[in-house]
Picture 1 (spheres, helix red, strand yellow):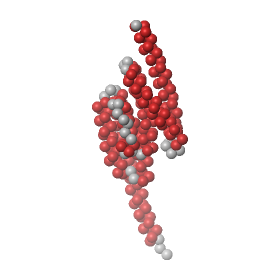
Picture 2 (cartoon, helix red, strand yellow; picture 1 turned 120 degrees about the horizontal axis):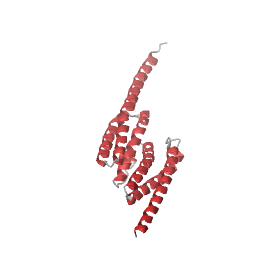
Picture 3 (tube, one colour; picture 1 turned 90 degrees about the vertical axis):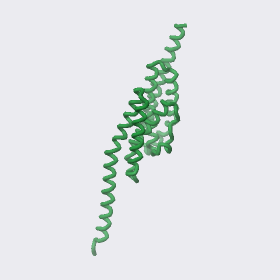
Picture 4 (cartoon, one colour; picture 1 turned 90 degrees about the horizontal axis):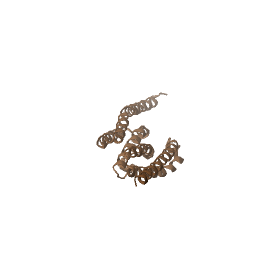
Amino acid sequence: MTLRDVKSSLGRIAKSLEKTRDSREFLLKNTREIVILCSKSIIAVHAGDLAAGKKHQRRAEMLLKRYKKRATGELRRYLITPEQEFVEATALIAIVEKREIPSEKKLSVMPESYVLGLLDCVGELKRQVLDRIRVGEIDEAMRVFEIMEEMYLELYTFSMYDKVVKESRRKIDVNRMLVDDVRAIITEEKRRTELVKRLEG
């Protein structure tokens, strides 16, 4: 009796696992740049520099497409976070530009990444609303809030998939508080604006 077949099998398995390990380390290291670029994109959009925001977003998209080639099988889960950040930045830019938010198919991202990215975008919309109110753009603030509220309502039912889409329930709970906070702020601002108009009249 020999272990020839066992040795041959273990050799093939070792090579396969080594390749998987290398790809995992590659993805963990390089996808951080995508997360950073998406963060810079969001910061630029909030700062009013849409051109810079779109530039960072496009760079992130290019890298994401490149790294997907290394993410096969179980390794795909290492793309959830960068894809999530990419969806968040892309959705924010679309809303600011008054365009439709692209579908998960158009963005070529996993369903889980898409849901989590949109959930995160709801929080960014609160900042957009407050920024618009701060500069007296009440109508724009209302437009963004309506999208924010509608997105929350559309995403609300995904709390039942918390075991599949991790953290979805927690993010939805946070978004509910954000929407309630912004609704109260906008209501108060509208009352203040109407009072000022009456006094000026």
